[in-house]
Image (cartoon, rainbow, N blue to C red; front, side, top):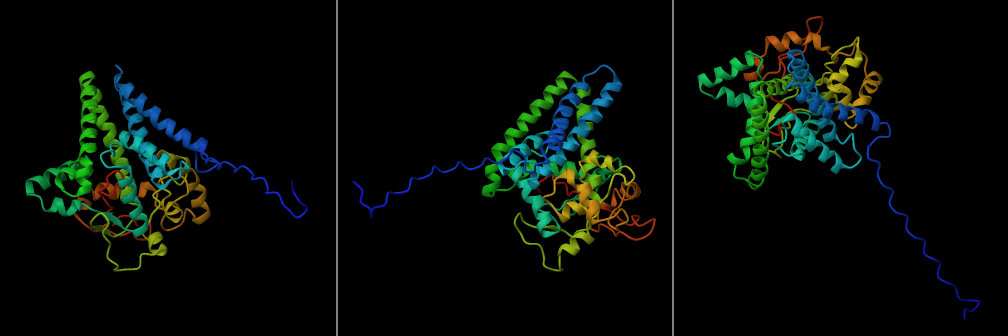
Length: 356
């Protein structure tokens, strides 16, 4: 029996369940991201199906569709690396693994690809663990000439070399990390070789056209990558430091970053590369999703901003210096006036699809 001075214990309220995170990181993300992922996945499947068509017109259309589906898939991987699509890092990582299988970046773990790309943003440099230029310049003359002949013919030999190196690296090095990667790399290689063997058995032509589509993706990515930075490149160990030889602050970042837009007159064409060409805006705010970049670019810069360089101004340099940038550490310089890109050699071997 309670007394006037006694107090009863307050009833404990049930704890509210933690609020579940939405699937997509941003409220305006479900529609554009779903459309982009659906286009890439369905385009990949339909593109492969069209490679078996009897009509060469349909085969050609399938090759282009397949190549473009992989291009969008590659740039979606970039979004997953920045965590701009899903609210949970685990979801971004799983989706990144899926699209890395589509694009051929699956021999390196997605987290390794992400780590390499984040160093590019944090260090404001092109951080590499494999110096392709030093390697190529050290080859016997005959081997170097083969690589240069392939590059002259617009076959991306440097990227093929880097993808091959990613596959071989676990078997070339004896570190604990690389030894641990051997089973996964071997299994991935076996599965992909079996899939390509099946494709070739069903249709040798389809296998060749698949390779053409993949090389088309690589060529578009390398053209876009070539002219987005004039950063210093460093070949360092995986977690090695870059030299503190200059101030690499945000001003340096913007001065050495370029927005190589597909078109100024028709901005919608930048969707062909998932707005990746709004690169100054991306570096100013790396967590901004791809579909917000045009508005962010318009807010921060004008089309007359010095770092905005339409692709039509870069095509000549891409062609003219396609051999020089393979062996020369110098990216060239970006000048002034109507011929400002004539001395801009560009970068090579800086793809986010290879974690080397």
